[in-house]
Structures are given as C-alpha cells and as structure tokens.
Amino acid sequence: MPHPPPPVAPEIYSDFISLISATPPQILELDILPSSYPPEIHSDSLSVALPKPLLASLFLTARQVFLSYLSLQRTVCDQNEDNRKDQAGSKTKATSSNPSSYSAALDSTLVILLWDPNHLTAANFRKNYLLSLHICRSTSLENNGVLLEALTAEFHYLTSLLTSPLPKHTKSSTLWSHRLFLLRTFGPEIVQIHSLTGFSTNTTTPLELHSQTATLWIRELSIILTAGERHPRNYYAWNYARQLLDTLAGRDDVSPKTEKRAPETLGIEMRKCLVEDSVAAVQKWCFAHPRDISGWAFLAFLLQELHYDRTSITTARSATENEDAPKRVVAETKEFVRKFGWRGASVEWFLKAMGEQWE
Image 1 (cartoon, one colour):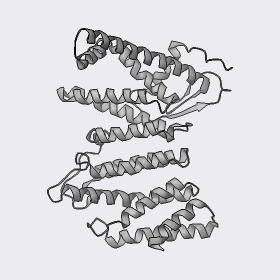
Image 2: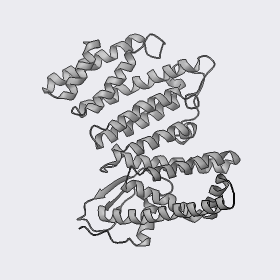
Image 3: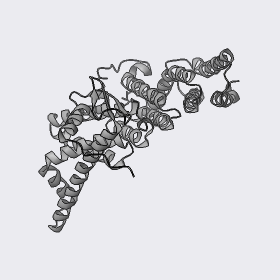
Image 4: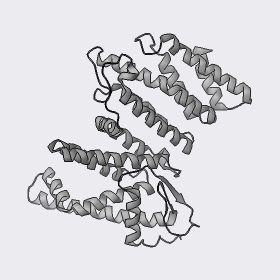
C-alpha cells in the first residue's frame, strides 16, 4: 500500500501561499511536476512548479487548516444557538473574533483548489468571502477598494488555474462556474478592474458604444481558447463562452443603456457585435485544431447566431456582410480540407451542419 506523504514544514507552506497569492496579483503558469523531481518549489517571476508528492503534503496541511476553521465555526454557531442568538449574528461573531484563522482558511482554499479543482466547498467559501465584501462596500470607499483588490486577485488566480498546463483544471466545471458566477455578480466591478472606463455615450455604432463589454469579451475569449488548447474537447470552456455571451449581452449594469435604444434592442445588438468579432479568432483556432469537435461546434454556434434573425436590427456591419460571413467560413473550410487532404469526423460534421443552409 502507498504511504501517505510526509508532513510539510510550516515555512514551506507559508512560502507557497506567498507565491500564489502575491501582491500585486499576477497571472502565473502553474505546473505539477512528476514525482522524480526533488521535493522543492521551483519558481520565477511568472511561473510556479512543484512535484506532486510535495503538492499532496501541502494539500493535507491546507485541508487541516480549512477543516479546523469550519469546525471552529460550527462550535461557535452551536454556542450562540444555545444562547438564542440569531444565525447571522453568530456568523459575524465567528468571523470577526478569529480574523487570523479566517484568513488562513481563505489562503488554504488556494492550495485545495490547486490539488482538487472540483472542491465545491472551497469554491463556495471563496464566493461567500467576496459576497461579504460586496455587502460591506457601501459603508466606505475603503471597503470598495478592498473588494476590487479581492476580485482582481480572484480573477488572476482563476486565470492561472484555467490556462496552466495542469491535468484537470482547464476542464473543471467548478472553476468555470465560479468564474461565471463572479462575472454575473460583480459585472460593473470587473469592468472597472479591467480599466474599461471613460467611454463616450455619444457614439453611434454598437461596438463603440459597448467598447467596455467588447474588450472584456475578447479577453475572456482568449482565456477560453487557451484552455481549449490545454485540454482537447473542452466542452466546459466552450459552454462557459456561450453562457458568458448571454450574460454580457443581457445585463443592463454591464452593457450601458442610452435613451436612443431600448434595453432589449441593445442586448441583441451587443450580442451580434460580440459574435462578429469572435468568428475570425475561433475559425483560426479550429483550423489549428481540426480534430477538436468542441471548437467546431462553437464556431457553428457563432455562425448560426449571425444567420438567425439577421433582419431584426441594423448593426454596425451590413446585413449582407452578416449573411456572407457563414458562406465565407464554409468556403474557407472546404478549401482547408482540399488543400491538406484532411479527413476527420469533426470537420465533416461541421460542413454537414453548415451545408444545409450555406451549401
């Protein structure tokens, strides 16, 4: 039977926490090395790697810290329940009376998610922390700054997990759901984090009017494309793209309104602009990964979005151009197949799906 990993020294655990939660936060390339490597942390300015046995030891330490805090919380809640105090008051007391243990538990979830990207309890713990900051931000500008810093760190760490060469993280439904939750809950704050302010509402085209949302979408799409490269047939990443497209095109607090257009029209208009600006990048990705049917399925989804109800509104690009885009992509795909003599089920499925409308 395999022996459990040896306990890790406290200073090694602290050093690792400092590396993955540095200030200011940075997007890191995280890697888990084979067991043959020496049990030490390898790092430079933008990458951190460690052998799997060492990560296992760090995880056991983090798990002990996390469970100890949860056990303490339950004890305090039970005591307050005995004293007939309300549940909300007990939670506040437990958190405020143990700030160091709460911070240690929060740090431990970083290690837990690196070891197990589908650890739902750790992800929910981080959600609750950000929600608590969201509630407190109205009391002072300082609290609002704390929320922005916490969201920045959270997004950078999630990006690190979802784009690094890790075995399971880029295909983790928990991590993608966590990222979508943050964008849906903290949309305006995330736009502010990405420095997408200062746009003019006097513009006439949807892309200019929604430059903030468009830029955020392009950045998220680049992360999705990278995750698709890390893990083939990454349906979780592409499904996140579909859901994010709905979110960015439909949220009034993310997509600003004007008096000239109704909110419903703005959502449709913004969605078409995002789709139009995504087709070329996704098509290029599919040509680079022709065996990956998940990418071709998303490309078909984008082209069908352009074709669907194209006469309902007038976008920055002409309706004729929207109608020609699917035909152009299909023609270029056929040329790709002919030029390289490609034979694969993924491309054949795409051409068959598109051929019914744009043959």
